[in-house]
Image (cartoon, rainbow, N blue to C red; front, top):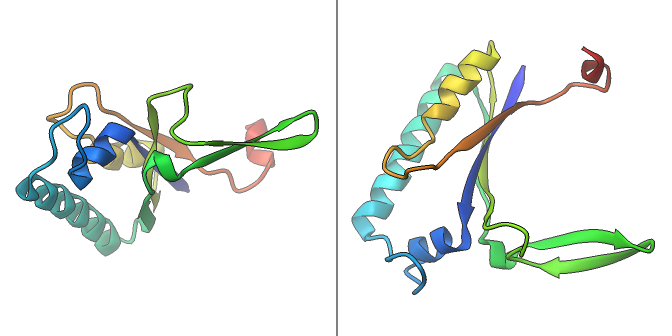
Length: 133
């Protein structure tokens, strides 16, 4: 079964990564290198085990748009969204033997130095029939 591991961040996280002034101090080049090395190592291992399907980072929330319908007409709101601080920052799609294994993999993406950080794991349905089960 395939599982989607969703990683979250805030506009402030993106600003810190790019050195923009904001609520958090900018990440040092060493911190950025460590972050990239960690992500690369986890993804490389998953590729070697055959569990990695895809992984991508997403652009900053300021480059996002939310589209809703109001009275049948699309209404577009530019990011960041007022409703929440956190947005989907990236994802890793894995195919593995069980939900427990997907959860084990997901735990590797949680930064142990960031109190309260989390990732979500959700099975991907192959068809509507699976909603019944």
